[in-house]
Image (cartoon, rainbow, N blue to C red; front, side):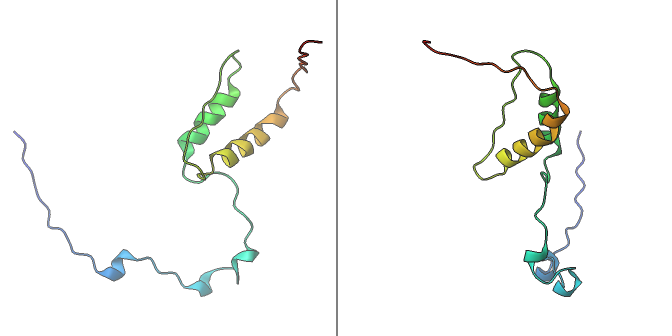
Length: 100
């Protein structure tokens, strides 16, 4: 048997639905003074998964990244690989020559 208890719902005013910010509290005059952000915001599981994929040392292991166009996935991957690569040994060079 399930007992449902309904709590009264408070009606919100339009002012309660909007966040207001006083521009005078910001530490800059224009956004041109703000340095561009780095990193990926709000995707900790995705960043952890990519980090895991970069650490795997097994032959044939690949990491697949999917997302909407313009979502920042390529920028995020480039940033993570640029951070990861300098700590790795330099791989051997491979040269493929076709029909030499």
